[in-house]
Image 1 (cartoon, rainbow, N blue to C red):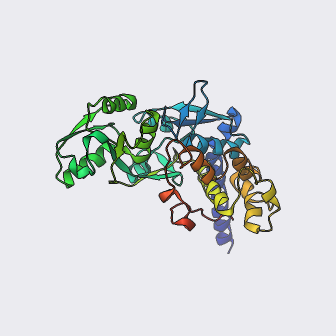
Image 2: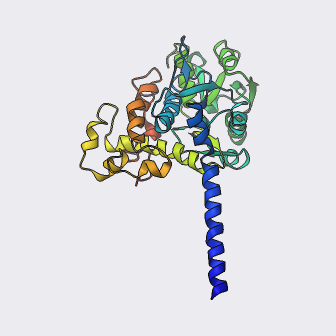
Image 3: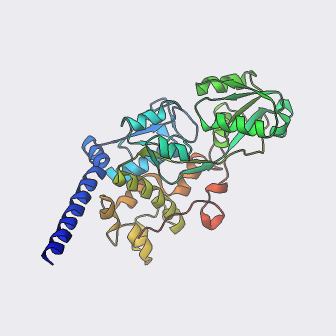
Length: 343
């Protein structure tokens, strides 16, 4: 009996010690961010609708707002972010090395990236798919009419692999024009060096808008040849930081579903709905479970609005990109945006 009691006690002590060690490790990024006073967030150097700096260095876009949302949750202000631009080849090293706390850069969530690069991913902030854009003068209406075409593509991306797989499986001959710098890829396409430009459809729309062109000038073909769920990534091994980034995304989704907006968030604290009261910290507990203040969701919504507001402002039909919600609509409207319960 004494020996069993001793073994049980030793096991409990070991479990507690392991839990404390894990908790200390889990808080590493959060502690560093609080001490530093801002989040280092990796973004695309310039992708209209997702991350673009103006002449004064002020950043805007859907990915930028995602960074600001996490900063608001953690530090109470969406201004406490340092935006660091990276190209497709640099982005993962920046996460792995600790140069950035999170990467919000139109990056596709894939199995290999999750298992072999030391990255973890939050829920997607944008569901996309790879497409093709051609000059309207070419008269092409389908990708399958591009036999023998030259196709501009960036290397080191899932786009390049998808291009090769699709054309081979459909027995379409093509000549890739592989250029690392995105601006040079775009320049090659618009100068007529390539018959087609392939990228995620949102990137094609962004590129077209940035060049002040319309569908009458450049056509995005109807085929979508891949699934490209864009998600924020961060270093594996910090469970608390991962929870913060993940639940920030779910809070943005749930706020839209619950009708909580940038304009009414304070008034909604008086809602009789217990789920809204929990989300907004009136009924405390959610913030403490993440190591944050109880008004973390209020700070997020005051800063960037809910997910629907973010989408419409940056890439929606009222923006230069004029994208429909499509897969990025709430699940209640036939889309994929679905929040795990905040309780």
